[in-house]
Length: 435
Image (cartoon, rainbow, N blue to C red):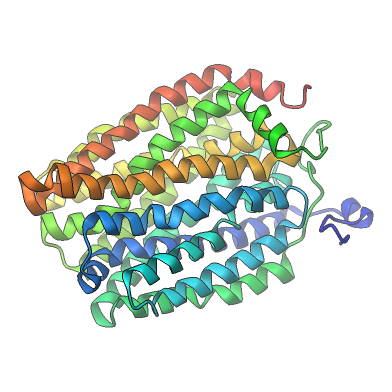
């Protein structure tokens, strides 16, 4: 490995086997699982933390949303700039160690302010994982396999959230919310060592079928390039609305089932866990697989499919929020989450494929900056605000039902933006390396 973190000429000539490529994909997917366990554990702990520190739903929406997301997105772009020039493996390993230690430290907080500061540091650590991983995996897998590979990587979101709910539900019921943070944080330190010692850096553009522009680009050049790609802009905006709906509903899903349907925390953890794990993983995998299959015939399908899937979410989020029967409400959540996950693989694959190879980590960070600020930041906060100031004065504890309904509907608007993106996608892909 050279001093800059790039492979030496000898390493660039070595072959990477298909089996090893899938090993790296599996390992980085596990990293993403831990990333989301440490992030999503907050969804189960909202009410216990609220009760101990005596704060409002708005404050908890801030803690689980903007307190985490603001610095996550703020530092994500400079870390991605580093990843487009240096060792992506090193950045990922350090990031895992940092967020894992900070998650464990969350259990030591003695005030709401202390917990907010520590969660900010968790976000700083987690910002260093996904953009370098997207860039690295795009050098392991070519375009016609990229949506599937990045969909598998994105399983981390759903497996991590699926594990966070039952683990968090059990731990908070039997040991308290502080122990939950200790238990999910510390194992990540060992994982960071595994990444450092077993993952290989690859030359940029290795998986491209033709000649690729591998020149370094300044941040200004990357931003101008992205702004000139209509399909990129529409994908980012559509993904932001879809994310706002998804993060809002999943973050407040556990309190919703507790307040509206009087479910216990263990029952909520098991129920939400298996749905998120099975429906999420199945949706994201089939969404990526089908997009790769249809995309071989016409690349526009990489965005047509997310458009159709976002539109079909609307009746199911309506059922989840408004149906009085607990069983029917939970059953409605299954197709909502399945369809809401299907856009993830095509989204990441197209963002990585629309930009030049030395722009990939930065493009991923810019995507995540916008998507997370609007989705992971505003989504949970918006439901908290609606609970406290719009529906709360009218419906009391039942306010969360109507807040989730309103935010869930916003995701349906993403279908319009994804469909518009499909119209310019082929031309933007063809002109990627054209000056």
